[in-house]
Length: 276
Image (cartoon, rainbow, N blue to C red; front, side, top):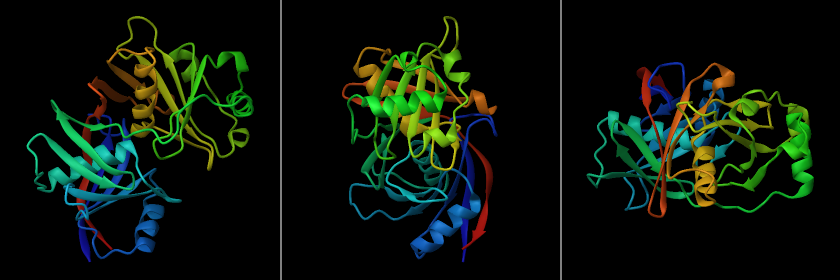
């Protein structure tokens, strides 16, 4: 059966400078094995499948697959899936928000000017990292443990932990030892130099498979909850990610009341059909 298919670049208004996402529309009737096989075939960090919601409060439902597993939530697939659903004619119940149903429950998506932004979901795990894990991280990043200025569990589904270095340039200079990283999913953040057009440089290392994610919505969401919540970041800022990979991702963060909104541009690279 032919289904509408998008391949998008998320967290960038310029094609090929963000994080790619494959989206299959009207995915009802596809079994889990077929979804997983297609995600392996696209070989992108994530592939999503749009479905009718099973929760009456949601506008649509999404299933999110990496080439290896299904995820309960991920950030750039949320923005990209919301964009694709609207581009295909989706009509939200509310004029102000789109409500996505996924593995972590309901996620709100709002238009912030020309951009979409999602409300960061609650953290599943927070608190400081233990000494053994910090030692593993320092070894994997090939730096001294003293260079890890701050650290925190920032897990909102994928399993992220995070460390803060003293500068964005230190973050960009990292050359991780993938074998030493093991199964750790690690976010690294550092403040940019004065005069930079972004506040922080972010990198996301996924030890299993030795993969660096170009621009990561889920990590930036939980980093924002940590950094804003502890006074280490202003209530609104822009983070850069992907510099070390030749990308130019920009993540727009804003705290409003109890919610942290994570936004970015989306641009379509492919709009066609797929036979599944």
